Image 1 (cartoon, rainbow, N blue to C red):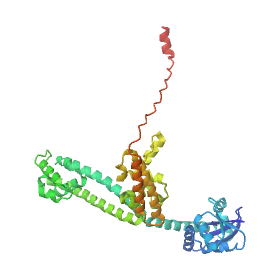
Image 2: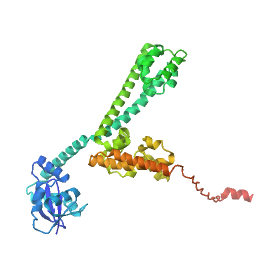
Image 3: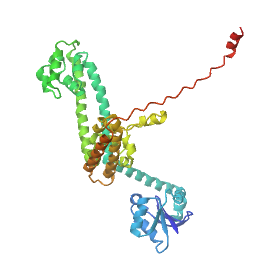
Length: 413
């Protein structure tokens, strides 16, 4: 005999294959206690009410049918009963659709408003707990930190460009000499007017080599820029200083991401580095989500637009996404990049699953495997593949349109 076990906000129910109610075991009527039982059940826990329900069929030759794999295994191991997994279960679906009728059979006197209110309170508390648990996951902090890093980068590009254009009214030559945005805004914020520039002051600033200092000083006295007042320069220096502080903030966010990656995803971090690993986690939505992805998807994460374009136009699909930023891939010859990206994606998929589910550190072993596979690829494919000539589709000569009435009239004349 097959008995279907179905859980609900009110308890667990035993049904036959036709959906007839055989027995039930209800949760406590207190909402908080009921929510606690439901969460334990969702996590695969064999709660007291489920044990009591199964005990009612003790000694009978029955097989219990459940929808949850983990719960079924735990029930079998704890109570030594036969179980089957059926998902989706038609009987359980029918039970959920007619939940009110089933509950009325075991809890008499429950009005429709009381039924709806209890159900609403249960669902509200479950939602709050799930949201809180999701927010407490450390990998979600990494996702938000990567988003913040992108926002800071966009803001830095905007402000750095503005400071360059603004300061070029006064000292346009500096824009060509200093390519680094961070060094440029630091010079503007610290020194201001070009008349304040001296070799000693420039050398005291960070990230400025002696060669750059000499070039700047060579341009100071022959600059074609306009003279501006101290008041005009003051506001420009404020903007430059705020921009420089954003660079410092970016460095702090990077440091935070590096520390978090060591804690949350040490194997992914060990294989591909903290920033690139964090970006992969961000694109997937979390470490668990990344662990569930096949390596073929991990390989092209970040190249979704190119993938959809290839499906739409028939162009070759992308061979790599953000994983291309790894030095081992982007410095390889073009004909080896896709193969090396595939190797990294395969090992990253393994690393993400270990980080998500076991926590064992195996990054060094995976890195050795990667090095060995890359060496094999470079030995096997030292030269680019022969060029394949494109197939030229012969043009179909279109038949000319009929002359029409005007052409016919001309011919008649």
